[in-house]
Amino acid sequence: MTTPTTTEKQPSGPPLSPGPATARPARRRSPERTARLRRAGLRLVALVVLLALWQLVTALRLWSPLLVPPPSAVWDALVTTSGTHDGVRGYQGHTLVEHLGISLRRIAIGAGAGVLAGLVAGILMGTLPWVRVVFEPAVAFLRTLPPLAYFSLLIIWFGIDEAPKLWLLAIAAMPPVAVATASAVASAPASLVEAARAIGARRSQVVASVVLPSALPEILVGVRLAFGIAYSSVVAAETVNGLPGIGGMIRDAQRYNQSDVVVLGLFAIGVSGLLIDALLRGAENRLAPWRRLS
Image (cartoon, rainbow, N blue to C red; front, side, top):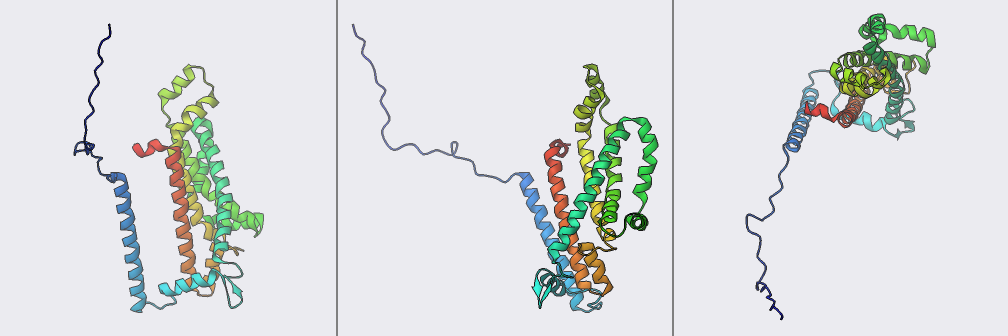
């Protein structure tokens, strides 16, 4: 005996259009993105206002153009130093980009060596109390010295070539990293350290797996400070035989009262410094993302 099968009748007619409840919600900007756009807009407005005030001051002739060059003179210096004009290439035979690139290479080598030395010294001072007692006064002493105070001694020791410049940048960059690293390592959570030791971890494993990850945000802040101090010391490092180099260009232009080139060099240092700090901030956000949540 067969049972009759029933078939469902499909509704006829055009498909129903989604109502308000099923419609896709409109895209909205996240608060974080809105805040970033607002900050960028405020910074752009501030920059425009500063440029307008600069132009106004130079137009009113409140100071001599030799003391405060107008924006147009600085722009002309940028054009002149960025290529070859009337058979003259850049400034003293090197373009602005070449001067800046050589200074950045010096900072990368010198400050990089100082950061590595500061990391090692900071880890040792933070984990070994007797090392901190011995080396902390020396690190604090170096931190209080201005770069020009010991640059003359470095010239006597190493001559006037690249070595004293690199040593100056390394010495300037080492103390902030050492202090930040030692403080962060010493303040690592004691409960986590004791837990790692309880499961049989050696001292090196505790440092690598517990102490350093906990101290990483403060260490990265110290690295940012170190590169900032090294960048501010590049002019001092290039006071002697600094050409080519952005600091050497500024010092040489100052001797000949070329204030437009001096201002251009300051802008080059400032803008490239902001870019370097932005890269370090990005590395900090990537390596220690939990810092933004604290």
